[in-house]
Length: 359
Ligand SMILES: Nc1ncnc2c1ncn2[C@@H]1O[C@H](COP(=O)(O)OP(=O)(O)OP(=O)(O)O)[C@@H](O)[C@H]1O
View (cartoon, rainbow, N blue to C red):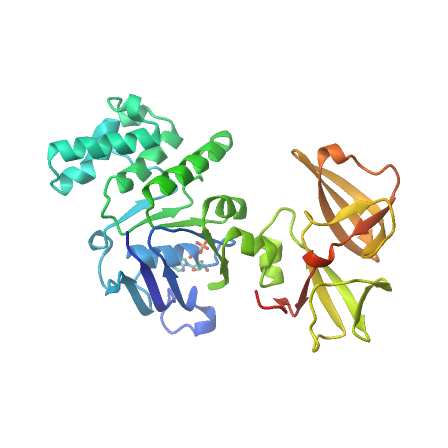
């Protein structure tokens, strides 16, 4: 498995476009060997452009792509030794499962015994070992997608596995188990994986490192925990998490923050902070309480929505909406009047859309 570096890589699909409008603004990134990465962001933010630059399908307008320090910018896809998994499973329909997995190794002229051992090892991991003799065309879409992945994993010299929205055509009921399987398999075989998705849940539950993109820029890279606990911008706070992070406008007078005229205690000190800023707090950390106390604010319950085993309650506090996510068994307050607690350690400061603390 290789380390992939992109060095000042940027791309415009049309010549002469000013840099501000490039599909991918020049950026530098390192994908470490054996780690799983997700590129996530809304449609059109540049994820596929970046993935295609790594695979060699797109030659960047600027910069270099290095695989283990070797400049591959001008190499075509087939000379980069990568495995690709696309939205639609790519299988050889006329071949059996075994032949599909063995084919890349036959092309590399491995001997028969070595091919057999490797195919059986990968088929075992994919849970396809009892279907090796079956024609691949008869399999379900999720099993076909596993074969697409397996064909990359049998080649243990592969530089990286690049996946572009691999769960798009999978039935919703099977998505969860296929994602878990892909994660387990990548933990076992440890390829360098770069996984493109527009679904933040998919990215957060799959990858060790998540790169959030916006308008052709990487706006934050971190572990799922870092992105959840300390979004570097309100954009990431809104994009990651369901429901999105709460952002409330608070005032500062004589060094004290207030919400609706009541003191808000916080765990940070920003001497130069503006008189008015936004604080972000995840719905998972907001609680409804029965007794007044520090950092509790009176509000009115506006709506209750079911989220499976949990509920999302929307409360209006001083004309601003605060969402709280609570386990179903906690129940719903009887009346409209409620008390909202914002835990001091979980409240973060933002101004002009940026986190004011260094994460
Ligand atoms: N072949 C192309 N020619 C011209 N413009 C393109 C081409 N491919 C992508 N673009 C533009 O480049 C920008 C980034 O597109 P890209 O496909 O990389 O985004 P994405 O985040 O992968 O979105 P999606 O999930 O919708 O594919 C978009 O504005 C898109 O319209």
